[in-house]
Image 1 (cartoon, rainbow over the protein chains, first blue to last red):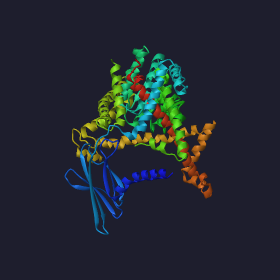
Image 2: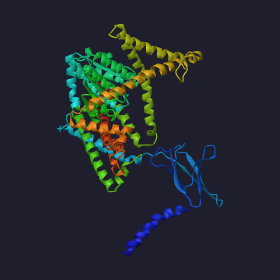
Image 3: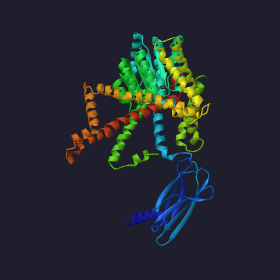
Image 4: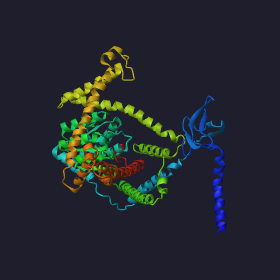
Amino acid sequence: MNVNKIITNLISLLLVLPFSLNAVSAFVAKDHPSDDGRAIDLAWNVPDEFTSVTIEKLDSTETWFALTKTASTVSDYVDNDGIEPGLNSQYRLIAKNPANGDSLMLSTQITSRAQWFNYKKSPLLFLLLLLSGAVIYYILSARRGKELFIRRINGLESMDEAVGRATEKGKPILFVPGIGDLDDIQTIAGLTILSQLAYKAATYNADLIVPVSKSMVLSTAREIVKEAYLKAGRPDAFNPDCVFYLTDDQFGYVAGIDGIMVREQPAANFFLGTFYAESLILAETGFGTGAMQTAGTAQPHQLPFFVVTCDYTLIGEELFAASAYLSKEPNQLGSLKGQDFGKLFIVLLIIIGSIMEMSGIHWLKNILMFE
Amino acid sequence: MKRFLPLMVTFFIGIIVISSEFIPHKPFSSINAGLENWFLIISGFAILLGQISLIKVNSNKVYIKAENWQYYLIGLISFGVMVLCGILWGTQDANGILGSHVDLSKWLGSKPFVYLFDNVYQHLSSTMFALLAFFIASAAYRAFIMRSFESNLLMIAAVVVMLGRTTIGTSFTAWLPQGWRFLHLPDVANFVMNYPTNAAQRAIMISAALGIVGSSLRILLGIERSYLGGGD
């Protein structure tokens, strides 16, 4: 029992010793961890008798200038102003006690370095590898011929119905890829659906109208529709002007599409991509024209508007699953199964995290919190 | 080769961008900014394609005297006037080929391009945005028609939130004693917004994020290639 006590005391002493020494007076500069070498951590610990602490830095003209001034004798500061990796930075601490005229000056210097790995993002990398691993595993399973059950997505099943309806009525199909540019994954998801829709439209000889708001989307969408017509064996039916540019402006784009809806009276409208305040203006006008409407976006604030005004709505992940779902290719369906694994993992993580937080155990939350 | 090269470029660029998220060292730390600049440069060239498409489609409609061809003509004229004003007298910060033309600017109060932007374009844009108010009313009416359990629930929640955000709604429950504060309408409205609504929105965002991971992997691995124009 006594031996245990002695060992415990020794360990406590060893742990406390460095801090005790620091408590005398210390001013330390450290390279900020896991960064690109553009920040330096400064920490100081000076006796309580001092009432003001000024941290100064030597600039390129060999002049000292104040970084911060504080009354705190034990504190830290992150200098991320004008730090270059590989360059030496010099700092000094000036602590003063006006009551007795005492002053203290400590100096330090450091050369910051860019790091090769951001350790703060390790949990993110772990999650990314886990989810990617699951997606790749299920893709390989599907390739080996494993049967995968994918739930029915009504919004996507409606595509045949919409094209059929347009064909019967002799009216066009309107496809709106949203106001996002090609650097937005929602726009790309919308365009992959356009590929399938254009193929069906070409097969059933239905007209397609694709007004776009970004020039990059214009060239991509036109190429996608052209390829779909080629694939359907009807290259002659492809009209390059069915994909056209309206304007980059949000409400100008809406005004243009509303005009098309009112004039052309499309039988079916598809709104798939990135939408903001224009979502309801578009969908409500489409509702007014009596068109069958399918919408999909990952913008949570716009989804209620689509749910109210459209016949079918692809919510969040369904927009991204659409291409895989419609293609029915085992490779692509496998990736959907991988996403489902991701959902299961996140749900478990939320449940376990909630229980741990309620029990006062915070390490899971702490390791998952990163900058 | 027509497919192979874009797929390889997509794969390598994708891997580099993902790596740059975890590697703060150069060149990875600056690669994202560089790629964004590339995108902007390519977009700049692509704008020309957009303008050509705009002129071609509208001119064609005017030429064949399509139905409502006058509107397409007005569109073309508006486009031309804005481009000319910008080229001749410049935009807000840049001078045109005729300089800033102080006399004209003094007479209009601003440069012609800025004048048209402020007095025509802005008002038209605001008009379109203002339509949203009426569309919200008609859409809300349809959503709140009580025909199922879900729509009843939606209507009750909406009424509570709307009342909780108004002065009159607050006064309805202001008489409640402190012990019954949880039934105070603003508190109930805040509860609805902070917990059920927030939870649902986060669920959508989490599932969308997983969808993005799946989509990105499909694109990076070359499984999803319809964005290239075709399947094979």
